[in-house]
Image (cartoon, rainbow, N blue to C red; front, side, top):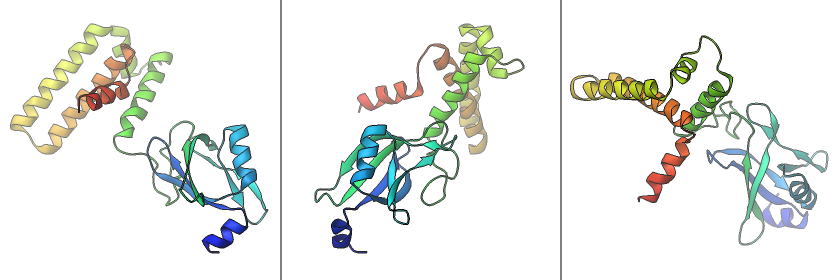
Length: 195
């Protein structure tokens, strides 16, 4: 089916993209009914050619309907980019190409989500729970200790050990940020504003 045939059938090419990771989750078509359902329900719909009707697109950790964020139309109106938000973690193989829907840097946000959950629930036996219960001074001490260990590895150690110690430092920093009610994205916005 070429672009003119699609247009005559009232279909638009549709690409569903994760708003945060920018990965392509699905590709397909939309018709006027699918567009109306998206507008009405706030969920992503694509056109099912076999059934001749729209269906809701699911994905993410809970395999729930993708939330519609925005629609971006091509200049000629023949295609649409659907920006979507999967619910929960998106670490499963749920992209159009079957790869993991998470960027390495986006994992820091996922990690903070996990740490925030620990902070709310404070499960017994959790190392993170112990840090939260010991308070801000202990958290600051741990960030400092891990930073010193990272510096030592930077000057005298291997690349792998340096990465390991920096990861420890960042983990403890995210715990401290969570305790202070600050998101890792807040740091990213601050750094972005400086450039």
